[in-house]
Length: 266
Image: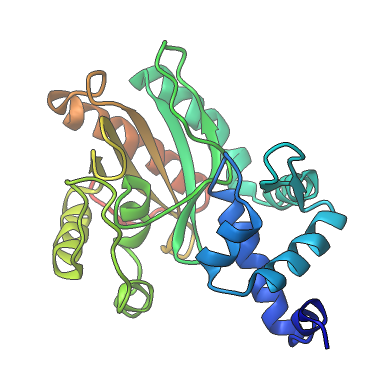
């Protein structure tokens, strides 16, 4: 039996999981990834990666750049994403609130949800200023190093938080990144006390973010809303003022989702 034939002899479930892992990996790299890079990162044989990539390419979920040989997301993924996002009513509710938040704060605003243990942007509104943030709808980020991620995590049941973080390495993105579960636990307690989360150059150098949780009619966290800017624009002295604006936006969306309790301090 040839190596390529051997690669096909995978159980369907394993092949599906690997295909999803490949799509998720490619989505995180705007510059694309080669077959060997993908195989190395997912720790599978190149022949297996090649087989799955060919299947994904034929269905339009990835495309291969002829010059570089690297793979990028295909238009089929974009179509799926738009159809999935269209079913999220919270986006329609949040869009005008995001615009208002941008007008008040002067910073780009994002709406994020919890997706497979990470924070994913499902809506954004750019600021009208000169500084533009390198963010996009569908971007998935770590919870421990982002303001929207902390806001999503802080109000989850303790058991859920343990399942997400226990035994998981907290990746260091910058020298300011929280990398221990003990420190993250204290940080999430602080988020609950003040009603908002902050990423103070913890995910990217020179970038500061503020976010607050959004609750649904059952009182559970549905999403988080936040603003993002460079530290020279969003200065530390402005954090309390901007945090109130973000909390107000989160409260407005929460109320439209049917939440009228006291989920966070306003």
